[in-house]
Length: 485
Image (cartoon, rainbow, N blue to C red; front, side, top):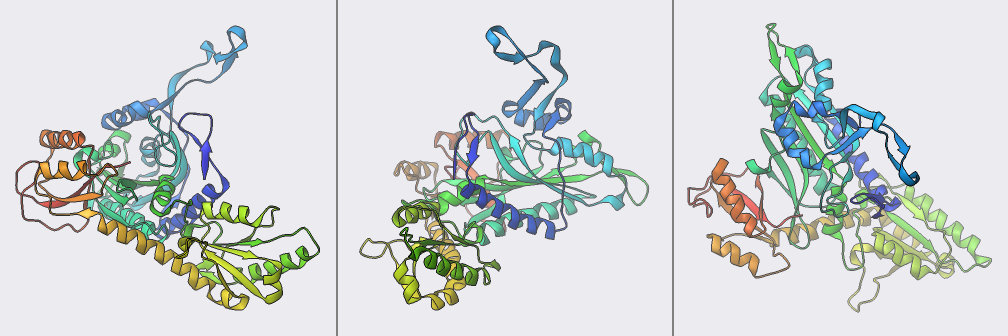
């Protein structure tokens, strides 16, 4: 999937891993555009002065910013390259950690009248946040993402857009990644720097930890006032726009791995698999190889004419030399949904031998091969791919539901619950009084001692009875707490 790059916290994404990202990008981009959002591109370098306009925003990212101060190198002592003191920039540039400030400056130029609104933009880009502790696909110094930025005449329009983006992430995670999530609002201390409110989708990994897999923010008018994003309303008065931002990243691949992986490697849901069916001809380096390859190509041509999961079936014939078992396990580790092994005898008999990646082993602990006539396999292949997609989601959803614990009614009980199992037993659903300010800081400190965080308040959470175990006050809603990545 990926490997270290030689730069701390940065990764090289290999073809299979990047192929999954391309599938995520394409499918999500279709959804984004269907909502009327247009793609743009904004600079990688942002003048430091743009950030200084929004104090809370710059404070939130200050420790993570990579800064460019010079525009030229020269040979120093011993021939080593060093920044040229004569090439110091008049104004340092920040390597894009997020684009609210630079897009805000553009919106201030583009928006003049209420007729220009809503303005709905998105960009696919890389960003840099200089992380202290990095983990592949989860928290890297550079990562790939999409970031949507929109401007509206009022709070209602902005909130509607923010929630639309949140629902896009929720439905995408479940339908395309087969990864169950809970969508909801983050507490005050977890808000995006400068945001009025932040919402997220939270996924449960196999070890019971939570992964924040996408966020959507209502920014109010704070960024508009800092950047001067104004419009003339129908009465001729000047008003500040209400803005939103929302994003999802290559962290989704990390979530995919930790949701569906097993002891033998990755299991990729067919919706995002670069190749849904991989055909492995068992080449013998003899005269029969040509006929075998022709047979495999016939199967490929028949399969790609079919549709599964809403698109034409994606098929690869792996013609590389090598032992069939080695090639098979290479694709097992990558997680190709359907693997076909075809030898000369199979071709002569008009058969195929199939291995479903999600059902790798039989009851005897051996590879769960299934032999069938070629025409029968081809006729059922699309349905089988759709069944793999559904089965992976059902498996993950059952694990997710089984590991949400309810009924804990004291801080001591919460502490005992997480102390019992060093492998993190899951999430706890609690009644919550929605503390804010200093009261919330005290709660966060209590949770930090247990290595826990509040994930979110689920959407549609109704008023609840009972008492908040942190504040002793009457509860107003539900929250989930968990250990997290």
